Image 1 (spheres, rainbow, N blue to C red):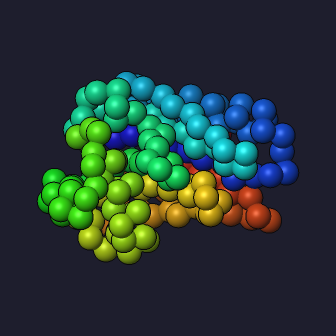
Image 2 (cartoon, rainbow, N blue to C red):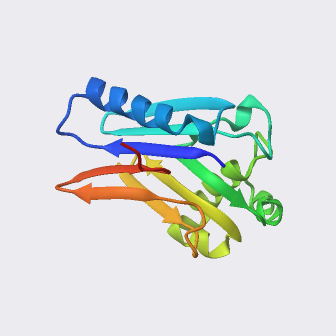
Length: 163
């Protein structure tokens, strides 16, 4: 279990969005006590509380970056080894052994259709820095939570809702 959180809100100063994201991550710290990461790109703030399971190295910490994509992910892609081999055959090169990195490469290769290839449980977002676009996905059964509010051009999301 990990915890993800994020804010896409241009109506507040970046310092306030960062402060709020850090509070969101603190509230759900129990979901991932092994590492906490925060990343921002002008308009978006992504956070992650990591519970290390597959790749225990720091190279698998999140938010994770690959080319122009940034990911925050909670879950497990059960068939990531097979997908990784398929992507390597297409020329992709990997730097760690995580399913998170496989998601990023799969997104680059197949776009949003990549989720049709995933077997597992997940909630994740990928920010495309070039297009300034956010892609969010949750597993078919909603095993991994993705709570969000999208209103008036603002988006807030997290693995948990607490007051």
